[in-house]
Image (cartoon, rainbow over all chains, first blue to last red; front, top):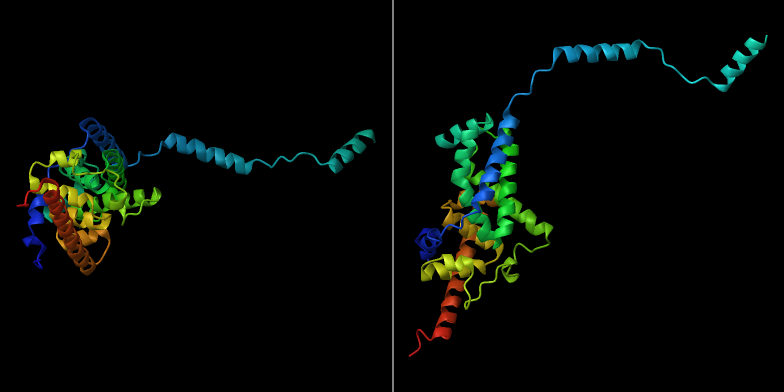
Length: 86
Length: 192
């Protein structure tokens, strides 16, 4: 056997093997799906809506400014009742 | 490669026509490779679809000097190796499993497609080789890759690939001699 694989007769025989073709309908569906995905991935992200950003900032500031509302403890209820009684 | 770098740049930019061009060139070749590697049409179709989904997922992050053919065949080959692992199929001993049996008496669709007698014998011999031998011969013989390019696809060093190719050539030659021997015994072609 020759050292160089290119001298082998099998190289030509394998190269001449007939092409096994994929299913056309499925290939077309995959092509369309992947093409759309590629274009979507490469598209720049849409600029954020300025009005929506302003509303979101305002809401977060409001949340920070609002005092925390805690449920009354049993002790504070008792104090309140005593105050009312007196 | 200038052609590749241009196509890579267009793919990174999300050019649909560039993708169509890549798909038209490589889809039949990748399917051919996967079908002959797996010996099953349905598996090859599934792996091919997954290959393209991976291509699209990674396209925006491609390096500018990426060579597309080795990259695509690497993805396809790795997916096939993962498929074998997930099904607990021994990639090395796949020839023994006969997912697509190819007895001499009834030709498979692969054999039927092979017009010439030598092609038919090569088709049968290929189907009986272990997975790693088959992939090397397909990449070098069918795809025309150099051993160095095939080494990139298979994730081995060029030296290891040269050894694998040499081993695969010997095994293919043995298979071809074996099938020739069977033919002689079966049809008495060379008997006096």
